[in-house]
Image (cartoon, rainbow, N blue to C red):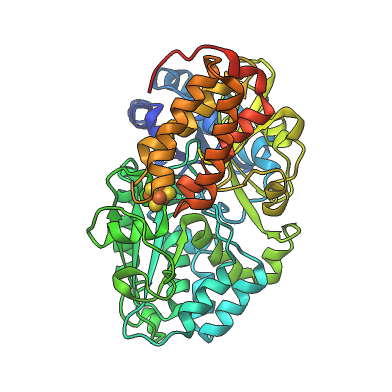
Length: 514
Ligand code: SF4
């Protein structure tokens, strides 16, 4: 009997290792023939550790399971999928899971992350196998047809980026994956790297073949030790099976991949700063032009995408660009892995086509707030995203629709707040975050964010209110127009949205001083 206990960091933090140990020892005691597979997460983080049992009808889910529950699970007959107070029936029938459109995460939580056999069984390497028999330009055309845009936040068309690198002649080209997932409330990259690392490896290899690159780097944040471990192990396995290395599967294409760990700076998630860091330098933002596609890593043409963009590529190649394009709305094609966090009852990952609304995500999947109070605001797209009031919860998730309301979809993270939130403090937090994380290269961001915190404090304390509100608006314009990168350039989004949408909150005294 096969029992699945996730090895994903979210499950581990909730005691998954203890649960696996308890199941193994109880099975031994009862002389039950149990094989424990450490899988990735299914993304229902509110149920972690989610233990699944393979039955003739499919996998049956139990969660959240603690080590102390294991004896009662055995007593209830969970090895035959029988009912228990922690039981949820068939995993794939749980509405949270069933109502998703899983393309990128199709395998996550189903396979053993280190089993190539599992990976192949569920369609893994079908995309690369096809790509190896195609001309690089045809691979790029397929990606362009799919409508895939950068999932890291900027939404730049992936096909155009790849074609720029493809068209350049160079003795060395690179592929670099941005896995510095630093946005608050986001964990999709981590879940994929831990639960289905071959998917990222395959996507990057396809990019390398398309662009003519022979070396790749995955830049992972230091807070993700399990991702680093799983990727390194999976890379070794892929090398041994000749899915990486020289003359991949006899195709004539060669590509090798290395993992680099960051040191905890938010700014290293900015692509040029990341390149500096991979090169062993301090993470400072570079001036553009030249764009990294032309002069990137070590001054060579480089394809840079984030984890979600690369991980979408295998299924695009396997099933075709048209298949992928059929999901989504407007110019936002395909699916996005939305991540529900903050004050939410059912936190987790929801992969859904673009077009779903914030309200559907918060209510239908999230089940409302954890506190049970009304949701008052949601920050979409990380710490640089706008705070949306409840009146905007019905705007569809679509890059262009969000720009129209001065917001951004970003990396798909949603941080929910109930009606006890103080939005003036949230505005202050956004400025303070920028002040702390600024790389210091340009004045509007370095000085502006510090002055911004001071001005917000004055507004909250009702000191020269009108004058200081005008000053804050002016400062936001300067930061937007004059900052070199998105950190300084986008910080005004959350600040202004809080100020405009929740003006009443800006009258209370600030508890702390910056
Ligand atoms: Fe550095 Fe901020 Fe300027 Fe970006 S906007 S380059 S983080 S100082």
